[in-house]
Length: 321
Ligand SMILES: O=C(O)/C=C/c1cccc(O)c1O
Ligand SMILES: [Fe+2]
Image (cartoon, rainbow, N blue to C red; front, side, top):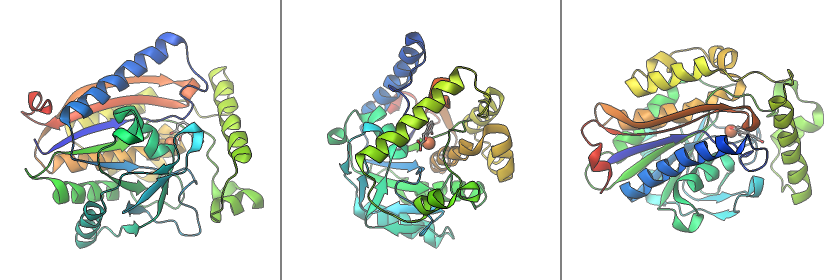
């Protein structure tokens, strides 16, 4: 039972702009079950594929992928700031495997990560203090130009080869998606001051951060109230993605052109690359089965919100140690 998988959407608007209480309770229950699955599996290592939202990676240098050999949470949206417990040797092992197989990952000895990593890790493990050793793997999902989605599969397969095997229990995690298009700025349309902000790394003060986050929450409230300024969530796209991942037919999604993701799911639908990578890692161990799959579109959170867990076929019960 060497690999298991959790893949969840994230939304930093959870707790800031909530849907009716029963919807929040239902999503939190699905997240709690995924957390129970992760803790029962008791991983010795967590490899988490996550995006960034111009908090850690800027156009100064924008790699398609980056393996964090050390990482610090920036503490956006009220999440805890500070270092994450990264397994540096494991990070280098993954980078070597990826590079040897033709996936040109960058390596960072000082990676900054935002809610795209930290919120999902806390969904699963509760607090930074309770985290097992992690390897954070940045997947660029917002900063155009993007490579083809299939590269995320190749990256995930490299992770599967690096960590598959009986020696240790490794949980692979995907964080992001599914259909959604929150107001994340895009360089091509950015006025000069925003382009500057997307390009150069600098400390963001608490006032500026709070203002930005309040703007996103207000946009989500307007979206939920019926504003047509934002792209609708697309449950059909989300179902197609979830079905393809569950069936193991990753090509059904990762062979699609980038424009398809944007047209069907919105700009941030590219975050499903993190799920593709996680499922691809699991696929290196043979056929797999989804243990649980939860889905609900939540406009208040700007998210087609899904939570899935999976194990290699025949290991459903073995997921509990
Ligand atoms: O504020 C941001 O940068 C992004 C917010 C957000 C909102 C909803 C879903 C997501 O995946 C997000 O990253
Ligand atoms: Fe996101």
